[in-house]
Image (cartoon, rainbow, N blue to C red):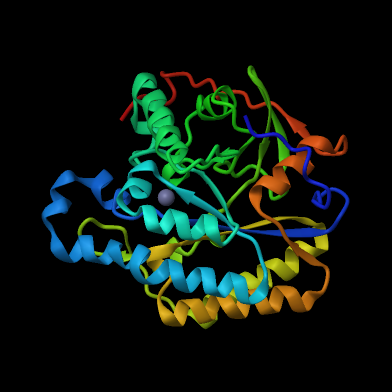
Length: 296
Ligand SMILES: [Zn+2]
């Protein structure tokens, strides 16, 4: 089970300004196969996703190394098995690898038994690389109410799927405390760059310099309040040449602020869990009267 005692220099949002957490999902073929197994027969779609291990990841690792900034890579078990050299390259570069399901099917669409099997198969796949992940992110952020419980039950110390804050906080589960490191759609490259007609991943091809400017202005605003700025990229999207330059510009702008720290999700989780000043929350399900909100 992951533990935190080797962390000495992590900063918590509560006492140390703004922390940027670069999170990069290496989903490979999983999002398109989760939309339909038939896409395995579609050469263009498969090759669109294969750009990630072959071209995108080396570029992204070079970019991170150039600025000595850490990142957390969320890798589904299926993608890890398909591209073991990609996983080894991420590990060799010293970055964190975290749990991102096995097949990228959303927990909200799974039975509890299938959800558990996803957790276990994802863990088994990472274990073959010697990885004991400290945290989890739900595919498409489609966490169910049982997701934080399962994350903690399976020995992880953080989740990064929920959106009710812009600072890392402690979520109390029946299995113990968990750090929640909240992402948001506005800080995700999917909403900027995802274009694939079938399966329909999105119709977005935006200007990377405009995207970088938007993220930088959001970071500037976050500094007024202090917080955990969780940027989300995907290898197959952000590994394109112009988009790498957009990300480069964002990193340079963030460093120029002078008071922004880059940390991986693990360090942020440990800092949040160990700081008594971190907000503690307990989620409660929303009880809904079926007479008022009938099923559609
Ligand atoms: Zn994903």
